[in-house]
Image (cartoon, rainbow, N blue to C red; front, side, top):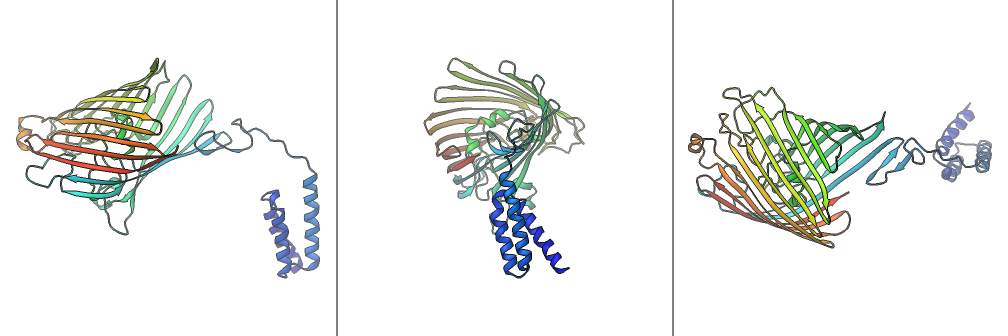
Length: 466
């Protein structure tokens, strides 16, 4: 009975090693030898198993190589590498990973605090100089996507995680993007910005359902050169997940929002996207109980005229706010822009106009607190020239916010009138993954009562994409 159990145990070990691959034959022989040396197998049992292994190996060697059967995706075998990116093709499913990591040394020098530097809603630093090692406008991110074609439809599941390198203070109430907490034994924030599904096919377009970047003002940030760097630092003494970049000094942040969006196929370079969105309550206004969704749309044209490439866009947003104690109001906004590339030079220009939408972030300072809308507008102009691995760029932008009425002016004298910034940037493409960047930024915030704050910052670091 003991000999039978030993044989069964050895056979099990042999089966485990043999199922791995033909290359494991040597490993199997070593395993049997070790079992024999340890006295687990008798001489007779050892010889019996070795004899059986040798016979099986000879049989495998004599058999013809199996034919490779294409899988449903058209590739050889069940699992193969994807043609681009990092991922695998498994049957008819493509699994892809993409991501980015960045870090910058940022030195920011702002005005000394005083009665005349107070600007409510200002983005310029007040409080002297500071240094930090931090993320830029982008945190890091890891995007995981599973895509396939089922029943003639291209479908996909998309997940985007955005971790920062700096510790954050969750107790401050801002979640993963709360104020920084530069102390030992803290943790960084992980902002799970993207969770959405897509389905579409040729001639139909694509439907997106879930949480992803919005439509209004998305082109402004996606074409901003500070997206890869720092821009206006904001909170450099205790860095959170990101800097401001040019947010609030040229455009309102589009944000990542729950949505159901449809995008048309391309018609000679023209595409349109329309969607319904989760309604957003004001960040600074009265309490709301919103009962209607928000609506956003974007129209884009991509074309080429000789050697000149163009991308033109216009987008819009509207949402009704149901105020609990006060008049309801409807916030709206639109933006338009152009990106023109000729030779090594790319020029971008954008402009936005809004009412009841606020400044810097959606629905920040959008009303006087009673539901009376404030108007806002802004723009940025930008140029980037690339010569081999080197690029040199610069931009100027500003965001303006008006009072709702005379009473608003009396009640909020230090409300921001204009936030603006100048940016100068140098890039060097170290390789296909890593870009080195250096940047100088001067930011200025002005209040309606004449208060003013200015700050200057330098940033140097790198960003990696894969």
